Length: 88
Image 1 (cartoon, one colour):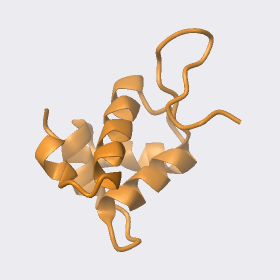
Image 2 (cartoon, one colour):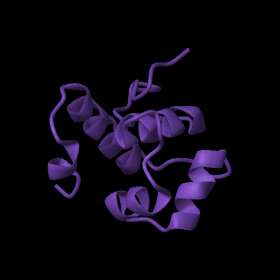
Image 3 (cartoon, one colour):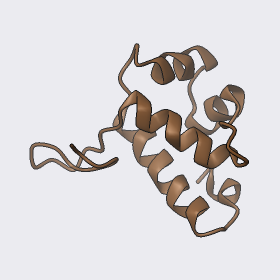
Image 4 (cartoon, one colour):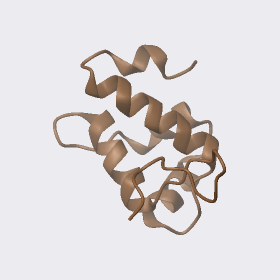
């Protein structure tokens, strides 16, 4: 299957599944707990309801939101404080 953030059809549009979205929230949340929906909503500039729909797979995750999450996960994996970069 595709890797998280892998391009599709030769375009540079990140694709993220609901499962990948949930996994990213757990990485960002730390201690094995997902990032709270309210914080995810603030970081991604969407409503809590939209975050819930993305988590459940009821709505597609927009490329810009996927791209931002992928970037923040990469920062988190280096051990840096990803929250400093969350609103850039």
